[in-house]
Image 1 (cartoon, helix red, strand yellow):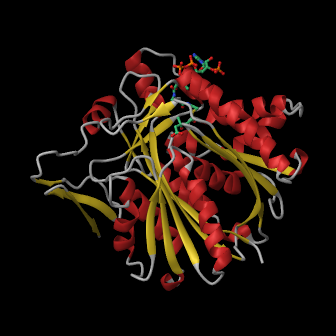
Image 2 (cartoon, rainbow, N blue to C red):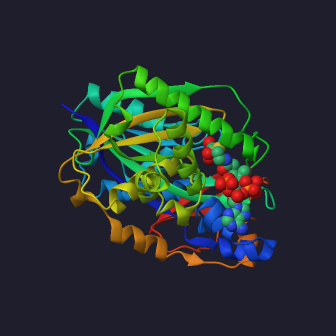
Image 3 (tube, rainbow, N blue to C red):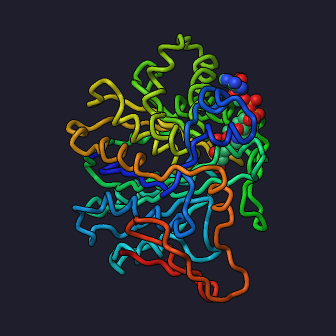
Length: 388
Ligand code: HMG
C-alpha cells in the first residue's frame, strides 16, 4: 500500500498589487523585482479575508466529492495565526461542516509547518488507511513597509488531502532533516509583521538545503539523477533557482542554466503572481510543477524542500501516480489568479490598516470579496465568519 497526496488545491486573495506599481513609487528599476526576485505581483487580502477564509476556500476545492465522514483529522499549518489559543482550523471545520467526530490542531514553525503536518498526517493514514487527513497551509506574509522584505509579501492557502493509495503523489518514506537555532526571520508576539535579516536568511536557507539533502542521502533517499524536478519553498521564485544552483554545486552535480531552469521553472508559475505564502508556498510550487511541466510526469520522482526560518529544513520525495492529469485544475487556477482585482499603491496602503480592534467592541467588516467565505465582524474580541 502507498500513502500520499490524493488531491491538492490552492486559494488566494481578492486583491493583487503589481510589483511594477511598487517599483515606480519607490523609484526602483522594476527589473529588480521581475528578474532579481522573480516576482510580478503579490496577493493582498481584503479586510474581510484572512488565513481562515483562504483555508476554507482551498479546502472546499479538495473536499468536493469526498465523503466527509472519512476526514477525522484536520491539521492547520500557519505562522500568521489569528488567535493565541484557538486553532484556525476549528473555524474552517465549522465553515465546511466537517463531522464533529474529528480532531483539529494548529502547527507552527515558520514556513516549514505544513510539511510537518504532511508527515504527521501520513503516519496517521498509515495507521488508519480508511481515513483521510486534511492538511491546510494558510499564510499572509507581512513585512514592514519600506523594508527589504516588502516586495516579497503575498498570501495563499493550500489544502492537501492525504490518503492511502493516493490518486496524485506517493510520498516516499525517506526524508532528510536539518534543524538549527538561528535568528534569520522571526515575529515576536507584539508584532503583526515579521522581522528578517534578509541576506543572512538566504545563506541559512542554502545551508539547510545542503544539510537536509545530505541527510536524505544517508537515510537511503534516491540519487540526484533520479529526479525530474524539484519544488522548493519559494519566498520569491528566484530563490528556488539560486538554491538549486547552490545545491548542485555543493554536491558536485554540475548543471548548466538550461538544466537548472528545466528542473525548477515549472514550479514558479503561480508563486510569481502570488508572492510569499510562507508555509503554503512549497505546495503552490508543487501544484505549478504538476500543471506546467512539459513532460508526462507519470511515475517520475519529484524532490521537495521545505524551509522554515529559525530554522527547520526537510528534503523529501514523491512519485507521480498514473492518471494524475485528471486531477489537475490548470485553467481554473489561472482563472483564479486572473480574477484578482489589481490595485494601485494608494489602495495597497489603505489595505495595510486591516481590522485588529483591541477595544473589545463591535466591529462589522464591510464586504469587499465575492468569495464563499468572509470575515464578517470582530465583535467582543471574537471573529465572526460567514459563508454565502
Ligand atoms: P535586497 O537586498 O533589497 O535585494 O533584498 P538585492 O540587492 O539582494 O537584490 C536582489 C536581486 O535582484 C539580486 O540578484 C540583484 O542582483 C538583483 P542576485 O545577485 O542575488 O542574483 N537586481 C536586479 N536584477 C535585474 N535588474 C535590476 C536589478 N537590481 C537588482 N535592475 C532580499 C533581497 C531577499 C534580502 C529581501 O527581499 C528580503 O529581505 N526578503 C525577505 C527574506 C527572504 O525572503 N529570505 C529568503 C530566505 S529565508 C526564507 O525563505 C524563509 C521565509 O519565507 C520565512 C519563513 O520561513 O517563515 C522568508
